[in-house]
Length: 394
Image (cartoon, rainbow, N blue to C red; front, side, top):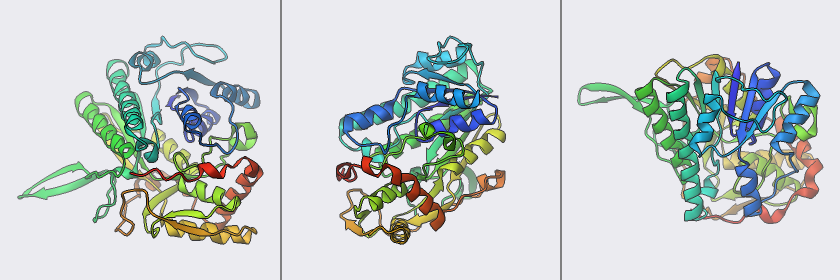
């Protein structure tokens, strides 16, 4: 029942920590405030101030009586990663300070998550590559040496696949070539250095599974939207980090913010780019169902973690329609696309596996969009228009 969450301060990490804690799991989170520090360095605004991870854990304990153990540290340091499994870690915050024991599951969110960040310049590209690959490699070796029975849930990305002119299967592809058959990882063709590091993650994990018999579930996640979870409704101070800038903000979250401050919705090119999306509450469901239904020893299990697909223009029109019903004069602006990507393409991913495990989707309806408008509106005066779009080019 011990869950170790790497990247536990992030947009998905903190809601996951509260979710599992509320279910009665023993939760430990690790983070080095990478995203917060990057937001400060790049001068991109967050919608509202967020307490530190230690403060959040204390608030959670006061409200629920449940403990989320906190470790502040950089997981690119292999000794820190190894200490999490050797029992030598000194908790930054815990009510009793005792070692939580070997985790049954590790949830790996601890990566630089932004495609634009990875292509600002060569320095940020290097940060992305070194952070993401070192953390994953350190985890693989720590598990090999101390805890091969621990199950890993890694948050990958649908961006690994790109937009191939064939149906996207769930991670694997059956091949027949010159009369022989085999099964291979689905071909990858990432469109950013961030997404390329996620491909390399998959390769590192596939190596570790084959060589050392590890148990890994890789969730190929689409862009996530949303601001509220059941746990965050207990206290506004428990809300997750919410970015609306072009570097760290996801598209639906950004469109809602833009609509509220009368900033034309930033549609790149024609807006035909189609991707798979999911609600933040469905991320929690997907991770939970993956934890309940473990991958087997020596198995790299891959699910496509999306619930429905939309083009950018689909999302812009939906945002405009709901915004105008709420009294906002929402406009759409087509900008020259700063990214190297196809605007018109075939896109037909399979995403049945997680539904088969028991995930019940939250679909993007007008009612859901209206809830997001209402969730953002109280922070309208915090929104800085100057950080919404700066035009980082590939």
